Amino acid sequence: MARTTKAPTEASNQSLVRGLKILEAYTSKKQSWGVRELGRELEINAATTYRLIAALASRGYLEQNQETQKYHLGPKVVQLAANYSTQNSLIEIGLRVFAKYEQQFPYNFYIGVMSADEVIYVAVHESRGPLKITTEPGQSVSIYGSALGKILLANESDEFIKNLIAGNPVKKITPLTVTDEKELMRQIRQIRKLGYAINRGEIYAEIASVATGIRGPDGSVIAGLSLSFPMLYMETGKISLEDVIEMTMQIGEEISSMNRRTVIR
Image (tube, rainbow, N blue to C red; front, side, top):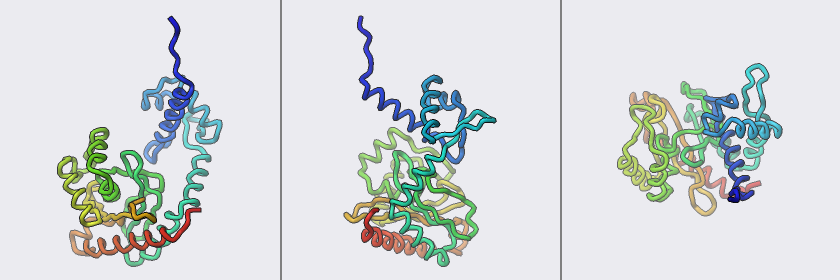
C-alpha cells in the first residue's frame, strides 16, 4: 500500500506554527527552556523540538546559555519589537499623551491590543506613584479579568465572545475575578452602553483600573487604553473613580484624534 504523506504546504505550515509556539512560550515568568522541557510543555517530540530550536537559534531568534544548555530569546526578537514600535504611530502618540498626564495621575498607563485569548501590552508608562506592579511592553494579561480585555471584548459580537470562552474558559486569578459567563456578558453589555470598563481587583487584588477604546480612522476600536491605581485609594476616597473615568475617556479621545491625523510610517 502506498504511504500517505502530507503536502509540502501543510507540513511547512505545521513547522511554522510550532516555531511560533516555541517563541510564544518565552514569557516574563519563564525566560529560558531546555529542549526536552519545552517539547513536553508544547507536546512536540524532542527531535522536532531540537530541530526547530536549532533553526530559530541559527537566525538569531534564540540563544543558548552555555552553562545551563537552555535557550532564551535572542537579539532578533528585540529587533522585531523595535521595528514594530518605530512603525506604529499609536505607541509614540500614546506615550507622549501619557507623559502629559502623569502629574495629574501619578500611577500607570497602558495601551493594549487583543491577541487570541489575551491582551498584549504595546505601550506602558509607569509614573512615580506607589503602584508596585511592573509591566513591560510585550507582556500579556487576561482578556476576561482586565479592564483592557473587557473593553476590547465589548467591541466584539456576543457570538465571538461565547466561542472564545468555549475554547478558553475563564480562569479565577484572584477571589474577585468574575468567572460566571452570564455575569461577564452582563458586564460586557453594560460596557457597550457606557464606553468604559472597570476592573476591581480581578488581576491583582490590590489594583483597580479603568479602560476605554482607542479608535482608528473608520471609528472602529483598534486598541484599548487603561489607567491603573491602588484600589485602596479608591476605597478611602483618595482617588475619585468618577475622576479617573473622566480622565480615561478624555485621554482615549485625545489619542484617537491624534492617531486619526497620523499616517502610519
